[in-house]
Picture (cartoon, rainbow, N blue to C red):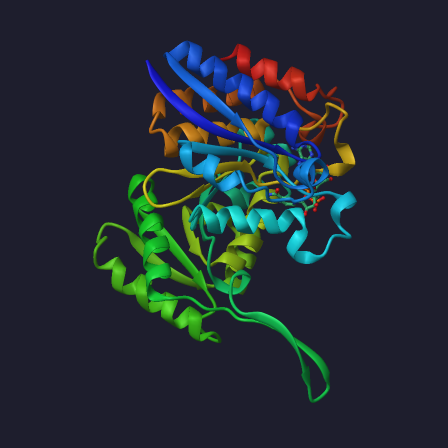
Length: 357
Ligand code: NAD
């Protein structure tokens, strides 16, 4: 019987509601497959600010480092919007990514057949299915580059520097090439090499590395074209590799094509198998506390945790299949309910998935 330590950070807004359902699913997987999950609950974000006066308490990093993986709900909310930038819940997200060395963000954008009516794109442009994996660099680029304000010739100026080193590009590209090898062996690297020096370095490194992966068909696409192609013909993509900011934008675009933010999980990985797993959506303060949020993105984040951090593929697949079965039997939370369908609650959706494992 294997024993795994999981750090659990429910966070703010709908975070505690959706994480509660995900933990029940993890417990069920443990019972069914003979694993013990030992949860270490942590406060981060607004919940931590309210309890101990900081969004990023000192115990977060050491406790996470002792664990095999981290499960996060979401942080932030209007109550904390007036805090100065460095003290805000969203800053805690950047700190945990940096502190745990989580440089590789994997965001699958999968269209469930049962939800195809929620897709805003014409069916003929999707093809048989849409199953894209976006590999986004997470601890470099413009979000982490030098940024400041200064007095300029025409008043105040502000600047943010996009900077990438060869090492940072190589390690994220390796993740993308390996993901492509395990999938359809096609990789689109997205950059803005017609304008940016950092993108020219990015493209050169990816091109060099393609020699080590002769089976992977690599192409390069400018980010403006990629944004357009994603809505024009998303079915053409399999693995997309891109930088921090471009990945932030393209992955939200891809998620909307699948119908709902409430469906999509993500993994943020460090070297080795350690990672942080969370839904791609935020804390949804507009629906918090009402038991109506969709828990599927968080439940699928648990599936990614099992697959990527613990190497438990059969267990991960049991969750994926249970989610698919729930959707195919017509169960919907409000965000994915078609006209005429009565939505079910967060806890009922969690239970329905649990029952199908
Ligand atoms: P959001 O993703 O929280 O919500 C956008 C819309 O999607 C809302 O209408 C919300 O009700 C809906 N939605 C989101 N998740 C849902 C779910 N599981 N089920 C049903 N509907 C869902 O984005 P926002 O409103 O821009 O941000 C709210 C707060 O979350 C902000 O403080 C923001 O900074 C924070 N945020 C946190 C993270 C994170 O913790 N990783 C990510 C994004 C935003």
